[in-house]
Image 1: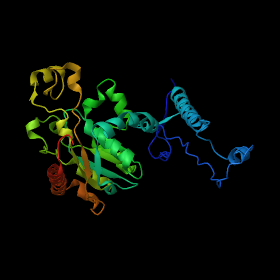
Image 2: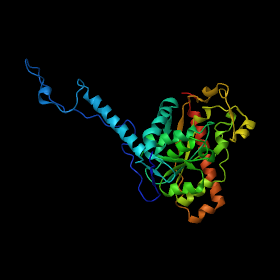
Image 3: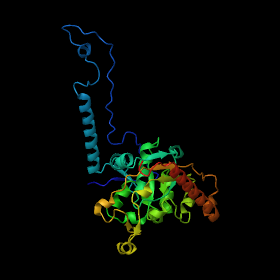
Image 4: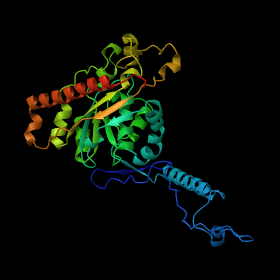
Length: 343
């Protein structure tokens, strides 16, 4: 298979996404409307005599035409993949594959299984940089994937969010390649700043493994947000910080225990014990179908601070605490409004 073309930062504009999702080929041509003609004996209907424009339901050509377009679109996509006539950026982000394949694979989980409700999308700019800071939970990082679908499918500009992921993600076979294709990159200040300066929406979950691997008894209680490195990055790029609260992910894998010895042997941060895993084997890895809510809060602007503000530890502490408190209060509010874990 041929290698894909790599787009260095700043050399080519971002490709337009219009019309790139799977199954969106337009086949809804409307037949021209004719005035009703009274039936006449020994005469064909007027529409047939004139050759009325557009396919009819009787001949079935509309459906055939739709399938032909979809088939041609799919074959064209496969040809580009085989010949390497597609583009990836310096971080390995494959926008075409993400739009047409990976999002389509995640969409049923988002829409049918977790039935995600998203609020506050108007707080994400239609263009330009933004740093989305969210809580992290669920034993496995499914929340980051659902965050991607929310912005991609429901934001008016169909924006991609470039998630910052832990080192472990990029050493796991298979997971590394898919994460790169989805636009994920290493959770470091250098990568985050490059993406923000390019005008991307960047997602970070500062709780890290402390959040995703916390016991079920501590659900929806935010863990420490590190040293506020994400604030410094946002200040240097002049990008707004958008707090994001996710409810529903805590219950998909209720972590009631942690086999620490086994985790050390496997070289992973924790080994979860849930009511179904590892007792039910692979079936224990199926998440519970909880009802999710994702809410984006009002952005906190950073472009009004002087350049030296990024090195002010007190300012970073205050902004970090502001973001954390905003997310925590929103979580409590969403929990009060929630009718049930599953509905």
